[in-house]
Length: 98
Image 1 (tube, rainbow, N blue to C red):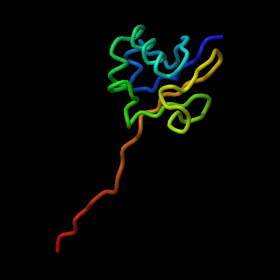
Image 2 (image 1 turned 30 degrees about the horizontal axis):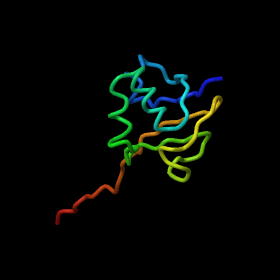
Image 3 (image 1 turned 90 degrees about the horizontal axis):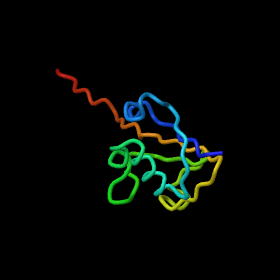
Image 4 (image 1 turned 180 degrees about the horizontal axis):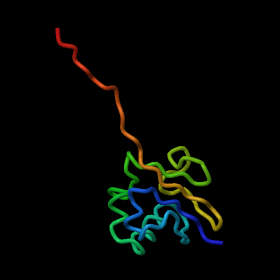
């Protein structure tokens, strides 16, 4: 049973509209390499200098890799991976004129 990777909507144009893809990899770093091979350009959107970008969250079976072994987090067949881009937000700054 391969690893299932959930692809966020903004990246689905790279996967020909697929919301999920299947692959095999030993850890998150290898997963990025496999995704790059199958979907060129994916690496630059997910990582920089071998590290997952700050605004990209990756979950392995609902566990955030930042609290595991980051890019070295081990993967096994049957795992479910979620790639979640961070949502930027902030307060609306409205000036009141008098």
